[in-house]
Length: 259
Length: 314
Image (cartoon, rainbow over all chains, first blue to last red; front, side):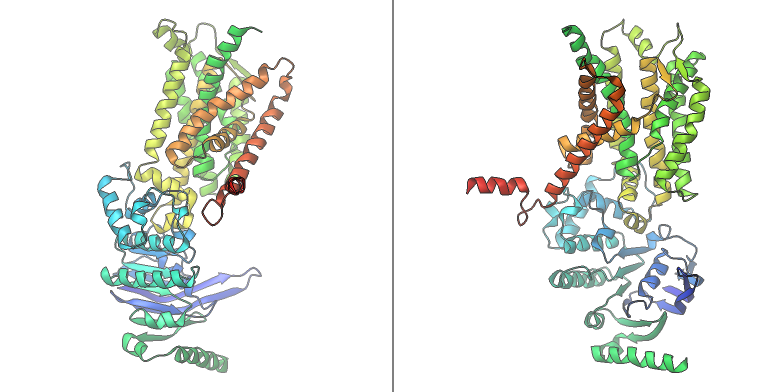
């Protein structure tokens, strides 16, 4: 179980004004949840993800993984708990080294890196099996540089890397936004399969409301740094894209009425 | 023309310089290619190691021990260089310039301007030479041995889990952190190794030439970078192993070219640094051009040469 307790995140803008991006946000992610997270630009989606990952430190509040307070741990210190896939396929992998070397780095996520040879034979076999399960024909190209892959292929490998060592939480930051529609569908399906097969806990940001409804067992709406709706699987099944739009508008109106 | 002199320079002088600067290039490769930093401190670290090593030998320290001490001090310099960036947040290029300037002081003080190996004191080359009964090429053999050992060691190290994590940090900060790599630590470690290698080369160079002046390292970084790019241009290395090999061969070719230029009877050696700079510009330009032509290297986007070939065929 992952808990966010009363998270505030303030940024100081260029002209010394304080920008409250996350406002007293609390969220409990249960084991096995696959949450889709939606919200307009600037609603704090990425800030929320970066706060969970440790790339950003909250101004106030706590981040707790299974009763362990990780608020003060930096992103690389809590990487053992978290698998990440970024929006830009170039962020999650290294183009200049081979596919197998990328996988070897991911295999030691959150563990001590020793003077043992990184590309061990028994692991190579494992990488090969994982790659062939992607059905992209990458199992025969393990020695090729990552940069020779397309964006979709790279994102598929990033997904593999993020889950090679089972994470406590998988964070997906609009990981199909930079892909063409066909690749995007393929990667989303792969994501779904990987999460189900390994019974992972995941939080996925998406800008596509249809995808937000189609995937996962929970849907969270973020607006101006607050969670304005948290739908369960059952509620989600009865929602339409129009309902989501309506909900966003309603919230905007009540908020502006308050002020 | 004196052919024996020409042969001697082709088979001993150029290769010894080439091998020592291959080690410099290896050090610069770690900072420039792996950590993505142009480490300017190399220009004063190279003479620093040479001066320290020669001064220690003059003071009675055995040549090999002086080499070890010079390398150890160089590694400390590398740590300081990295710490300026990691802990004080100074831009890495500026940090290396600060270290470069700072090292001039010990260089001048220790060497008093110039340091020369005293009569009766032995460099590591002289010791090995007497060990092998004055074998003609013992200097070359020793250097080949050094290059071999350190290139293999670097290849091995960067294939380990730890070494791979350093390579990852330099290439992609977000990927490295997402995989639990402390990129500050890897930066420091990489810089220590890089400057250790440059120091080793400096100490070897000092002992080989038995002389070092305080400003004798000017342009070292330029040579190191030129060798890296020369290697890339010649081999367009596809793997880490080939990149390293291209440094060793690049070093040899670089000095062969420079030495041939110096040997031109009408060449004024005052123009040497300008020549090196022009040569480096040329090599980097060719490298960039080659890269540009190669980026479209697939079926839909044939390279310029490929299109030319098709046109000729058609």
